[in-house]
Image (cartoon, rainbow, N blue to C red; front, top):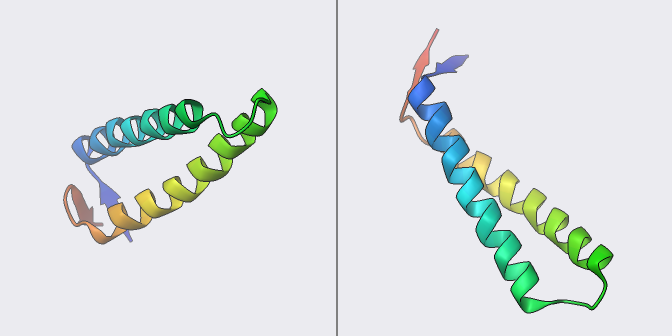
Length: 68
């Protein structure tokens, strides 16, 4: 088990917000459909996939974490 430093948490939070904003921009700029509902669904599905990948990448990073 490991704990993470505050710096790591802040970096992860800021990094995720950047990824989420880019995801939203791409989905909205492409206008997949004329329906806001379907665009919102697309944003949530791609956001969930991106979040999974983002967390897996951070799990492989040792920056800012330490063993208990």
